[in-house]
Image 1: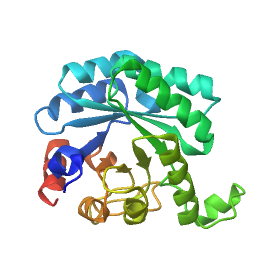
Image 2: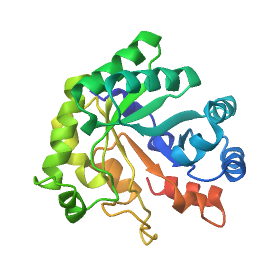
Image 3: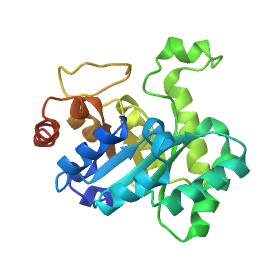
Length: 236
């Protein structure tokens, strides 16, 4: 039996990250209409434009992944989650290291809205490698840290996690067929890795068990973003 997300074509589970100023983000959103289904709004764009940018993308027909990576006391994160849902976000994030009570409070706040906004826990940022993680004082292996944080997210009742595609297969086995596993750190073969450390190609990420993949710069910084998006979709 297919998980709910698997009935949706892979092309419709590619999230385009618009980590750029407003003017460029709007140009890209218009150009990708009718092709991409999801757009990601991160801190750069949201802190500049606020909830209005979510509304604009929704009016253009997109689903919105609001990736603010909240990490605070439970009361604050619950309030932020409710505000994100009110703004129209279809998917939101928080750091799993905030703990189970924090994530439970956020999930309860989302549930109280009556909306079906997906809640995701950030495990270990895809820019981090084992040495970077160890420098923060975490002594366990990176994959063990991802597994521990994903288990906390599941305990809190969240919809899923954000992790690198290199951990997707492990997380699919751990979390089961219905969990959302959203993977940034996705790069087409031969693309510049930028500040990403743990990466995979779009097809490899899906094959490993990702429910959604996030791709930004290989599309948004391409000479022809629409052609870049279509080329990625063609390889899925």
